[in-house]
Each structure stands twice: as structure tokens, then as C-alpha cells.
Length: 453
Ligand SMILES: *Cc1c(COP(=O)(O)O)cnc(C)c1O
Image: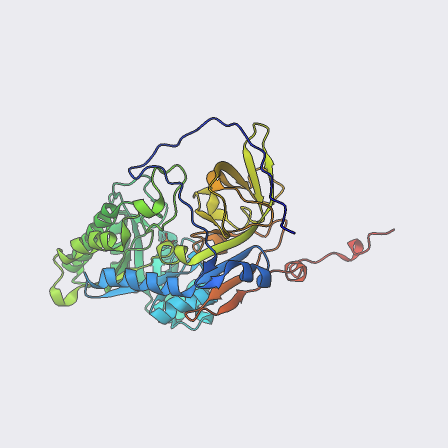
């Protein structure tokens, strides 16, 4: 017996043609049936739906691509993995194996990096909220501390005395790079003299080892020229230190912020078209440095804390369609088992979504809703998609950055995360949460333990 064909109610709809880009309208879809050679349907069957999958191959390839772009143009380059972008230990260790240092922004991340076995002298400690205990440990471990504000500077000077150590520090500098908004809440401002004030205070204290200069000018920065301006301003500070104190800094740290292939909400072109690419970014950053007055044998090490651009493409979120319905105005609604609890970045991006099986040619503007009982649970407000039916599977692209650190445990449990290794083998790198694992943080007072009178 042949299976009964599915019926789709015909809907008369006004054509709401989107603006074509220079390539015309993009309605071409191809099913994505495999991730790195492993069948989506097998993965979902074995590990449940939804499921995060990370490609080790993509991470290593992206890393090599970025590294090559910089080492082609600058003699000494070092990457430091931004833990908050994705701090699953397996992911961090891929970057560490490739040669990345660790870049952390809290005591928790610092401890995670230590537990992963990285040499503490290769940990860069950023962020505005380093607790005194964290600072003490970082100083004793000789880690690189990037100072965010004056209170922190004074704490470090006091701890240097107390611990009889000479902490290795840099300052974070914020500046006008021609891109709005200026991220001036972190670090010391270049234009108004705060940065020089902090540098003078460090140099004249005589108690700290000023090792570098740091900036992190924004995130998802589409403009390479902004990095060029930032590099020029940091080089200017470095040369100023040379002149005033005859002090050589060891490194210039340009932070992170490179965009991934994701498409920002409201963007005219897909993110893969607007991404400037590592070569253009490397050119913008290294040009002012190689043209500056550093002696050729004393070029500072160039550190990059690239997060998103190295890991976003490596992450996939696999899921299943729960149901279809029509809105009050007749618009197609597809409900999927992935909500904003797992896809925090859907507040900023229009994620690319591929059906995981073949489909008909017909497409329709669809609202993709998650399974949460709340109105904001919208994965895509308006996706032109082939028709998906209950039980159909799909793959959401570019979810490697920030989703697995900003996800929420809300209403449901967080799913498994798999890593597909270089040989196409799947490894569980984070277990699905359970009622027990979540409940272990709770305790019920004695008088509330019994609910029957
Ligand atoms: C978040 C962060 C990064 C990484 O940023 P991406 O946009 O993911 O590249 C690097 N450095 C600092 C200080 C950060 O806070």
C-alpha cells in the first residue's frame, strides 16, 4: 500500500516579493541530510531531538584559515580562545591543541581554563568583574591581567605589595574607531586621555610589569577599517611608552569581534556576502602595525581573541517539526522543538535553516515558532521555506558561537552536544540534562517536604 499523500490546504496569498539583491531572489534550497558525513536522521534517532552538533573539522579549518591570513602579513601572531564564546571543554581543547592561549572574563572561566590544563601564564584575564580572590590567584600564577578600571589597578598595586610579586598587566583601551556605538564602558578611553593616565599610573607605581595594550572594539564588526584605526591608536600608545619611559611592550592585543557567516536581522544581503573575511581584516590590522616606527626586530606580538568567527560555522542545531498551523491572518506557522531557550542568538540573527530531507518545490513565507509557552519564542519571523511537515527534520546553521554559553534552562532540559571528530566519529561532549541534574541545586525546607496535611 502506498502511503497517503499529505494534503496542504491551498492558500491564496498576496505576493510579498522581497527586494532582490544583485543575484536576484534567493529561493534555492538544498536539503542538508548529513553533518560531516553523518546522517542527520541517525544522529537524531540515537541522541534525541533537538541536538547540538559541532564539527571538529570546521573548527580546525577556520582556525588555520584565520591564522594563515595573519601570519602571511605579520611576523608574530598568537590567538587566544575566547572562552565565553563557547566554553565546552572539548571545544576549548581543540583550540588549545591548535596553539591558542585562553582568554577569560571571569573567575569561573579562569578556573575552567586551568582545569583544561593550559599553562596559567598563557591565560589572558579580561573583564570588569575580577574578584579580589581571582586577582590574587592570577597574580600568583603569573597570568596576563588586562585592567579594566582604576579601582582594579589600585587593587592590583596593593596585591603586588602584599604578595611580593610583579604582576604582568595590560590595559584595555576603548576608542573612537569611526563605528557607532563606541564600546566605551570597558577599559580606558584613548581620546580623552584616560588611557595615558592609566599607563602613567602603572609606570610610575614601579610595581607592575606593563606587558601589553589591549582593545576589543565591538562584536560582529563588519568594517575592517575600524580595526585599522584601533591598531594605529594602540601602536601610538606603544610608541609613546617607548619615548617617555623607554619601555617596550611585549604585545598588542586586538581583541575579537570578527563577524561569522550569520545574517543579522534586517540585513539586506546574506551574512556570507557581507563578511569581509579574514584576509581583509588581517590586512586592516597589520598594515598600521608594519608601517609604524617599531624597530624591525622589536615588533610586538600581535594577539587576537577571535571567538565567534572561528566557531560559529562549526555548530549546528538539529531538530524536528512538531506541527503546522495557520495564524489568524492565514500565515503559515511551523512549530519546531527548538526554541529561543537554545537559540539565544535568534534575537540578533535570521539563522539559515535547511530541511534535512527532500521536499517539493513549493515555498511559503513561514513563521517558525519554538515549543516554549511564551510569545517571544520566535525562531524566525519570516522565513521563506519549503513546506515542512510534522516529524520532518531540519538543521539550523551557524550556532557554534554564544548559543551553548547563553542558552537557558527554561521549561525543558538542555539537549546533548555532540562533536564529530576528524574521522567522522560522534562523541558526546555534553550530556542531556536530567531532572536530577537540575534539581541538585535545590533544597526544600523541612516544613515544605510533605505536601499532604
Ligand atoms: C567576547 C570577547 C571576545 C570574543 O569576541 P567575538 O566577538 O566572539 O570574537 C574577545 N575579547 C574580549 C575581551 C571579549 O569580551
